[in-house]
Length: 476
Ligand SMILES: Cc1cc2nc3c(=O)[nH]c(=O)nc-3n(C[C@H](O)[C@H](O)[C@H](O)COP(=O)(O)OP(=O)(O)OC[C@H]3O[C@@H](n4cnc5c(N)ncnc54)[C@H](O)[C@@H]3O)c2cc1C
Image (cartoon, rainbow, N blue to C red; front, side, top):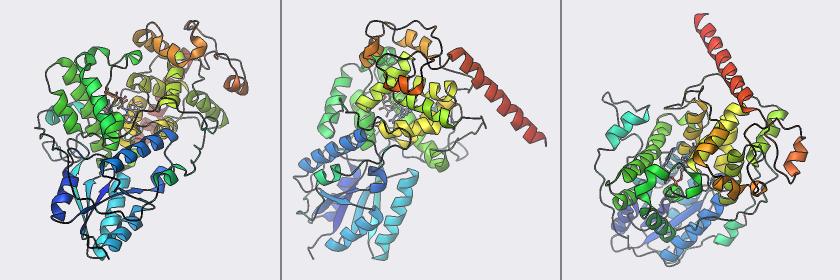
């Protein structure tokens, strides 16, 4: 057995700079070396869409280069793989950055128990958030349920300066799975949409720490106009750092330190970052809200065969509503979607098509590179009116007016919907009479699949019915 005392297990913190947990592992090893580990968990990897997989693999490739080729990659359930490796090398401790997601907490409890049975320990240091979930409390010790009061506290807390690059002595190679082998794992086809799985991803961002720093540098040159421009999907005026925050190629501390407070653009950006911490906090306080309504309204939703067909048209960008379709096609090509268009497309699915928000959330989660359980599920619930800070259910985004307001000259729509390069049809479309197959496989742009005004009324009717049933339920 090789003398070895410490393992560092990377998860959503794929960087070497400003890394308190990695630094703690190096300090713990003292004169010894640290074995850097990443475990590809099939429960997560096999369900990720092609874009998130590709991005993760490119992050791991760069991390391995930065670690002089010493990253040990294992494939399997962490609860077995981590203790097995610790046993192989006689490690006393395994260091990690704490994870507060419901699955992460369960997984880490399992790993900690398995390690402790062999006299070893799992040491959790830091968090991938600025304010770890659970750390900000109301005056009475409870958790915040609304963003603004949460932000009023969070925005006043000091942010420690980022650490430099961690430089350890990395343990010499141990048996490792090849990245290429991981990349060959078959995709699990999304249960509803099988038609677009083969779609080539065209424009994926580069993964890894240096690409993250380049994205941050680009954003620093435009951050001062963030508050004015951030709602315009054609302008690429947001940071595009959600992927780096999700995989931890940057810590929010590093971003905040680089941004500073100076202008209204900078302050608006910091507030948006606050939403990420807030949703993680809400999810950790309410683990069931990952896939269930935080505040159920009991509104009837459709889930029959017709609903499935409507879902496929939405997911493939064939609704006949240009802004929705442009967004859904951007999602398929880039694994990214602008925040304003996420809201419009989500509202369309829930309130124009009357489908469960979970269908849309699962599809986003599958396709997005930045797919993040807390921000995605709570972003969807906000739109559906069943989450925290919920926009009232009665607020229905009009996809045509949203396009007029935020994509006035149709630059964004025409970028993603080539059939409309000759011009965007007028807003008064008729309901499409084409059959499902004609539309899905047709080469021309479809007519609007629903009449927005009619479906808005239907959404409100369903809400009213749900409110009456709830009242009747309360009075019996
Ligand atoms: C239906 C829906 C689903 C969403 N799903 C996700 C998701 O899976 N992953 C994800 O990271 N974000 C999600 N968001 C939030 C937001 O759309 C993205 O964070 C943002 O579009 C990413 O682009 P950016 O990095 O350029 O954002 P910027 O505008 O530059 O914002 C900076 C950072 O602040 C955070 N942020 C901004 N807005 C939000 C928000 N509303 N909620 C939480 N964090 C926010 C993100 O970390 C983002 O990277 C979702 C929003 C909606 C409405």
